[in-house]
Image (cartoon, rainbow, N blue to C red; front, side, top):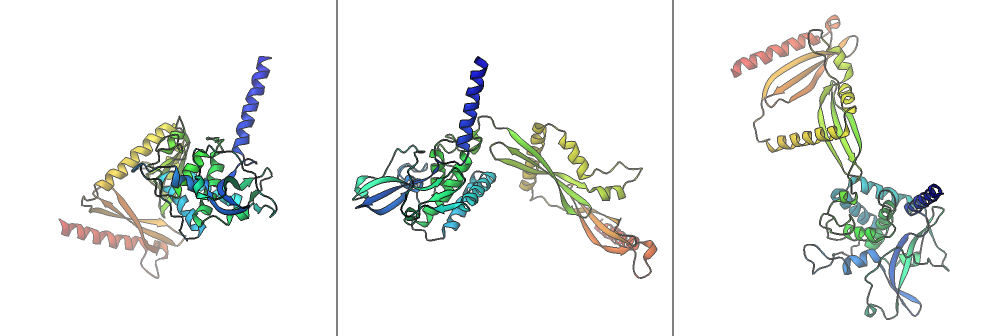
Length: 392
C-alpha cells in the first residue's frame, strides 16, 4: 500500500514538473497599462519598467538600471544585441537556446480578436508598481502574449502598438528566455528570474555584475547547479593541411559552459601509411590519438584540456621570445599514378613546426616533360645545405 502511494506521489510530482517545463497556457508577457475613460493611455512592459524602477546598479546603488527607451533602431537589431550580450557574458549555448525558442514562437503567433483581450496570468512576484500620479485613470496589469495548449501563441495587437522598439525586443527575449527557464534543469514556475535577466540584457548593467536571482544570487551561471558536472566530452580531427590534422578536445558542462583546446597535431591516416618505415616507430594518426582519449575518464580529459589551455596561455605570454628556423626537410608524397606532392616542413627553435605544400611534380617514371619530384627535392636540399653552411 505504501509503495503504491509513493508511486502515485512520484508520478504526480513528475507530471507537475513536466507541465511547468512545457509551453502550455498559463505563461506569457505582462505589462502595466494606464486606462482612462475606457481608453489605453500608455503601456509599460514589466521587465523594462522594473529595470528602471526596481533593480539597482551594483556599482552605484543610488541609481537604477539605465535603458534608452527612445532607441529608434529596429527591434530585431536590439534583440540580437541582447542575445550577443547573453552569449558573451553568460553562455553561447544558452543564447542559442533562447534564439531557437524565439524563432519557434514567432512562427506560431496569432492576434486575438479585436473584441477580445487576454486575461492576465499571475506568474510573477511583483513588489513594485507605477505610482498613481503617473496615470489619471486606473493602472492595471494586462497580458500582451499568452501561450496556448495547442502550441499557438496569441498576442494583443492593441497593447503591442503602445510599446517602444526596445520593449518589443525585450518581450521577445522574455518569452524565449522563460521557455528555456521552464525546462530542465531550472523548472522555473514564475517569471521572476526571467524578468531580471531581461532587464540586465537591455540595460547598461553587466551580467557579470548582476547579484540577482538570475543565477541563484551568484555572479556565474554555474551556480544555478549545486553540482557542476561534465555533460559530454567531444573530440574533433580538423584538417590543417594535406598531411596533418589537428585534434581538438571540447568539454561541455551541465551549466552550458565549456572549455576547448588543441591537444596536438597528428598525421592523417592516409599519409601515415605512406610514410611507414619498418626501421622507425609507427607514425601516430589523429584518429588513433582520438581513440586513446575516448576511453579515458572524462575527468582525466578535463585535466588534460585545462593543461593544454595553460600551455597555450604560457606560449602567448612568452611570444616576445625570438622564434627562428633551425631545419628544413622535404618529402615526396603520393598524389596520383604519375605525380607526387613535394612537402616542406620547417622546424623552429621553440619545438614547433610548419608544413607547407610546394607543388605537384611528376614521379621518376614520368619525368620526361619536366623536373621530377625527387629531382626538385634534391635541388632544395642542396640549397638549404648551402644556406646552413653560410649561417655557420
